[in-house]
Image (cartoon, rainbow, N blue to C red; front, side, top):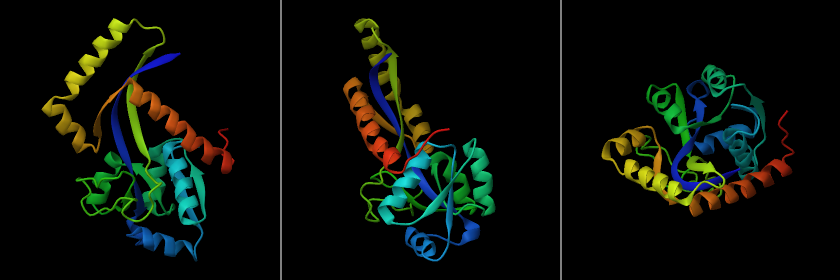
Length: 208
């Protein structure tokens, strides 16, 4: 149905806990899990936050129940109240709440630290190389679109994203700019499908 033309944005997820729980590091969360039943929230079943939480369970050996919501906003309300133990949220949704003390940021899911969360380690720094989830975006066009039109789009997108103002504004939201072409987007889609399909199968996740 669609042909990829470029791969341009990535946003890390942040593992957060409500300040009310007093859990400030991943090690503390794992220790807490040894003697307590954990629950985590997700915007709905099959979202990147849900799948990343399941990946965390697999890689750390903890057990936790998913509480699916109809939106991230609804899940955040219960997280802030302390009814949930942890949550993977986007960096832009974490910044203000971490800064004002409502949430504790335990780790981020990219290989490089986020300058907006300077004291938050990456999952890789904590020893979990495979927990590297990102929300990602690229551009696609209807299959069969004329190659000249595709090239025009590619050139325009590249030009816009090189602008200083847009780069600064995106960085404030935790969005990482990627100068990727159609092949990179195509490979990204393939890699993500393989990675998450295995977890969906193994954990018997069903979207209802």
